[in-house]
Length: 517
Image 1: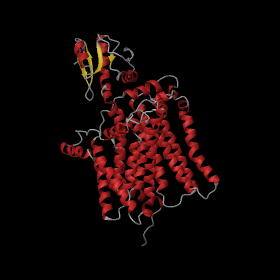
Image 2: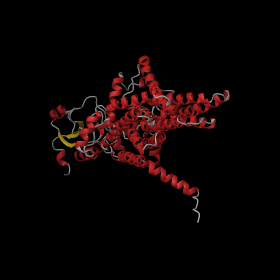
Image 3: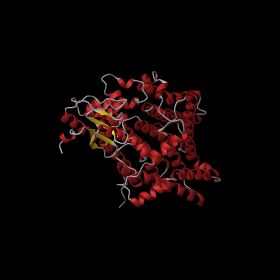
Image 4: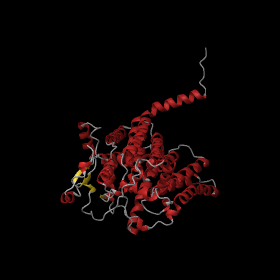
């Protein structure tokens, strides 16, 4: 009896099972990353910058999202307004655009990792280094434009990688479609956060330069079609989404940053290798990871550089690996040109260099370069040794990043971590003492006013900024360490102390006694 031939649906089912069996570590890691970011969005207190975004560019009754301010990340503000209008005010609706950016980032990185490598260990380690990096993951949650910018940048990187590692000659139709996608992604990334502008622009330019080479021999109209496909979507999207902001944006807004590339690098490193979660990592493993962390970046750079040298000088291997080397070289060029543009901007216009969140785009670009170089299959003992060391470094880095998972604070705004828990205490104290005004540290009013709006508290005045802390008030919200002397002189008692931060709610003696136990 002859065997039945599987039909199309059965073949598709078999293909999906094969993909799952091959990619299950990435799929599980990606699904958990989505769940974890949503969890963080729900449980973590709104921060100073998130609250300012809501209060200044979203909550107003007129279209304030068109105001040209560096703190106004236009696409993020527009989408926040849309989600709040559709579903009401909550942590999730405020952070929904960032979470969408996070999903786009995870999808783009999954596509990039599975494209450059089919080796399970390398692919998983590379994916984790992209997604679970604490520096990156904070901004896949926080209600700012960085999550969306990262998401669209990762999609553009994925499409660029698909184009450059293709072995056959591309059809013009494919080039034009890829140009349109990268153009749209670069524009959306830029509209989400202007600090990604150079990286987005150079990524698009790199693809168009490569595509122009592929258009040779197709006539002048072919170049024109490519130019339109690569430029028109970006121009239209930028004009529609951010045109009113860009045309009125003032140079004086660009004040955040540093004057030292060394400081840029040091902060990126510190933010990426955040403290390990002692509830997640046992003390012995934590000790080993901390010891490895001291030299892990240097080890990764040495391994990638050494492997690249071996590939370049290995006879007869260039044509075998040239598509990977072309992709790595293109990403490196984008990184170097972006860095050079920021440096020239600093030298000529005195605009500060990227620092903290404004340097975020360097992380996926640098990680991508390392992953592409190490994705090349070794052909001799030396290559296997060096590449194995490099993949091992990526694995250790990925384990460290997983061990640094946290859901209680954002590194940059740890000072705001306890404000959601403190708010009901403040309200109850005010009502028991018949107080309508609370003096606070300058970092707290925006977040407290957000919760005042969220919980519709109308019997307490808006929280205000104070240049100097006024004496004689019944209730204060302060940072304990900074105001220790003031608290002592005023004879204040602590009614609430933050679990994560140094926040305290302090009151005059007797007020705290009225609180229910």
